[in-house]
Image (cartoon, rainbow, N blue to C red; front, side, top):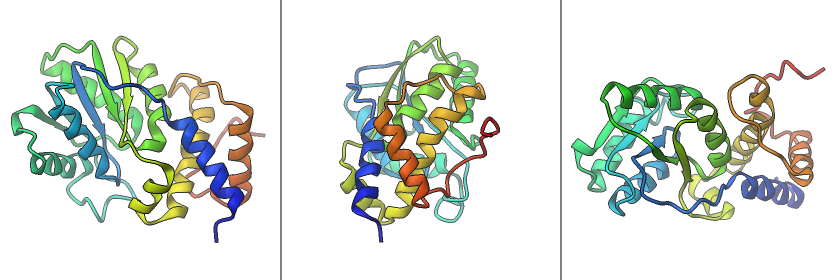
Length: 220
């Protein structure tokens, strides 16, 4: 049973993770692999709206996706985009990345190998990982302008779509922790975290939403 306070705290983390960028035309759109096919849907929608001439799907598998996406997240995303009418010649697949940093680095290498000029990128992630993905991209590819995007939906709608509230909150907590831990490890740029967001995160950790946390070697 998830308490009313935990729901409120998760909503606060959700609101903070959303960057609230307005999509605009960019050189390419990169869809970050995950368990959520909504990322592929949103990427395809942005392509059809003329926001980018080229789509990159990036992602291998993880403990969350190895059973439901056995051929790799990027390959399953590609299949979904094709179903939604994105032409195959407009899709590139990067099948090896296993974390957000690799998503960015490997996608950059792929585009550079193909001599695709890139000055701006629409970065499509799960809604609760917009800020984390944005901070990572800024660190690893600062030469381009990044515009964050995700499926436009509320926290309640997202939980209903995934049908696993605890997993969603666990992942929210994990994304929030990484915003604090990873800048110290050189993986992303630092983000200013409001006190009420930090307090919400601490309460959720105390309530046991910790399965997606990573070791923080700087903690005493």
